[in-house]
Length: 282
Ligand SMILES: NC(=O)c1ccc[n+]([C@@H]2O[C@H](COP(=O)([O-])OP(=O)(O)OC[C@H]3O[C@@H](n4cnc5c(N)ncnc54)[C@H](O)[C@@H]3O)[C@@H](O)[C@H]2O)c1
Image (tube, rainbow, N blue to C red):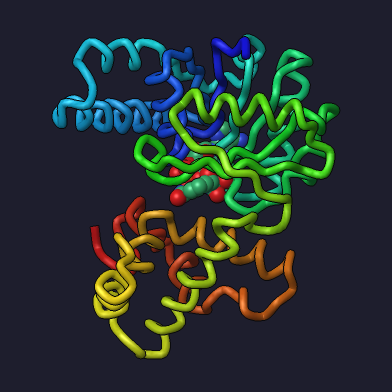
């Protein structure tokens, strides 16, 4: 695998985490977002995360500094002309991703693989926006990326086996475990996780329990490390709604219908942890 420089598009919770693990693994990273405030926030978040590893004795100060030095930030997408591999982590919106992939296809070197970190959107549809659908795949990292060991690898209808092999090799080089999933809405992870989160929100709406009691039941009764509503706030309620919409539309089963309370909270700008208000206040 001759990958030295990786472009990451979208410097939110996921893109900054992906940039961090790439840099920690010795790769150069070009992190792109639409504006300087997002890039500054991402760098601060990466510094804080690496600092926690140093505090716990799991990373030396020299390795932290070297990782930070490997990350450059820019709002100029065409800087990715130099990348050997590109991972997209922008907003969970099919049209936005298709527009971006079409642009990346024009900028990136012909052999470069374009990966999407989408939680639910069809890799086949994203790949079809490019002239290289065989070199488009899903690499669904989990949040927080520096901690979680899984990468769900999604094979689109046109994705080649060689692309899957190279993507999986990169995931392993980052210390992650790749697991392949077929290109159906929500893949494996969110097809199973999101109905549980949605049901927990229905339970709040119907007064079955408070967020605290629902989370406590799932933690102490089911041995989950985190209750579903705490997890929803952590993922982002806007992301949860976008994924449920894709599941509902793509699979056509009413059991995926997003809870009206979730829709109302997102409309009110209550996105969870990142906005300061969700099922809990931050
Ligand atoms: N939040 C999670 O737990 C989680 C987990 C796995 C996968 N994902 C997926 O990862 C992706 C990103 O999610 P997130 O939680 O990091 O979102 P986020 O809202 O924290 O960050 C998205 C970033 O993308 C930027 N952006 C939007 N359009 C852009 C464009 N055209 N070019 C460059 N930057 C652009 C935004 O400015 C923002 O900084 C989504 O597809 C989401 O479904 C999220």
